[in-house]
Each structure stands twice: as structure tokens, then as C-alpha cells.
Length: 221
Image 1 (tube, rainbow, N blue to C red):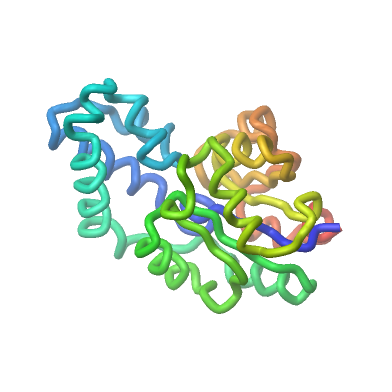
Image 2 (tube, rainbow, N blue to C red):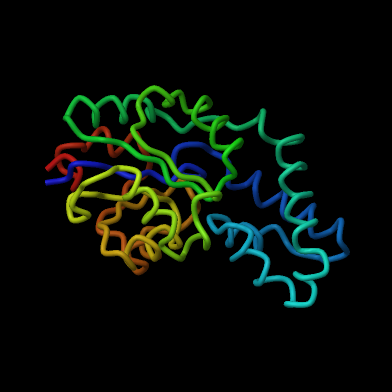
């Protein structure tokens, strides 16, 4: 029986993935690199440590990777953060999970300050028992560090009783590496087929559909 649920945030609870992709495109352009929106969009869900090597050489990363990533973060906060909205029924889903006696953790590749803002946007800051951000993981998804950190924050719990909810193949791959069952949502732009191939046991349209079909999901069974 599931005792706790670990949620990704970007693209899962809040509608932010397109904004992140646009910020990356602008940041690469600032440093003389041409990256198309759809190319950046496909990599959203990774942290900078996994994102940059897709588009930059090792020497470029050493030369200006840190500056590019910092520019992206500031550009995103300045131009897009205020525009982000939560997906429907996120708070209601969290309330349902809590009323079922289960615990909730967040596992995001976002920086800690962004994570605080995201919780307020989604109106879930009073419903969370544990959280991890980019600062808590050596490597971002699709490596499992962030989910492993969330498990530690949850305390003494059998990982077989913990489920993950995410919107990208990177969430599924990361969770699968430490044998956590994954529910995928389509709000991140990945297809159901892609999410299942990456390891998602169930796929739903969004948080609202998980709530609607709660008792049929691995969380509610």
C-alpha cells in the first residue's frame, strides 16, 4: 500500500515548462548559441548539469556554462515567473491524498528560492511533509539523486510504499533507477506512449484526472 507520494513540480503541478524552454533559448542566444525552442523544450525536466551538455561542448561549459545558467535563472524569474499558473485541482488532489493518511513530498530540479514560489503558486505549501530542490542533489534527473533525497527527508519508510508523479521521461527514468513506481501526467508535453516506455506504470491527463480516478490509481488502491 502506498504511504507517501513524491511529486515533481514543473509541468506536473504548475504550467511552467514552455517558460523554462523559452528562458533557455534566450540564455543560449545571449552567449552566442542558437538553440531552437522545440530542442530546449524536449530537455526541460533536467537540471542545468544534464541540460547544458546536450548543447555545449565541455570546453564551453567550463568557459561560460555557469554564467549561462545564472543568466537563464534570472531571465526566467524576471520575465516568466509571474505568469505561471497551477494546473487544475492540484490542491484538491493533495488534500485527498492527505485525507487518505498518506504523506506528500516534493522533488524538483528547481533552485530552493524558485521552489518556495512554486509552492505558493500551486497553493500546497501547507500540505507538504518533505521537499528537495536542486541544492539537495549532486546530479539532476534522469539520475535518481533528487528522489533519493526525498526518501531520506520522508524518514523511515519502505520505498516500495512510495510512488512518484511526474510529467517527463526523465522523472520516470530517475524513479525507475531506485525502483519507485511512477505515475505520468501528460501536462509536460510527452505522449502516453513515451511515458510508459520510460517506466510509468500509469498515465493520466493531469492532476485533476488523478483526483477523479483516485481509487483506481496506485496511490488510492
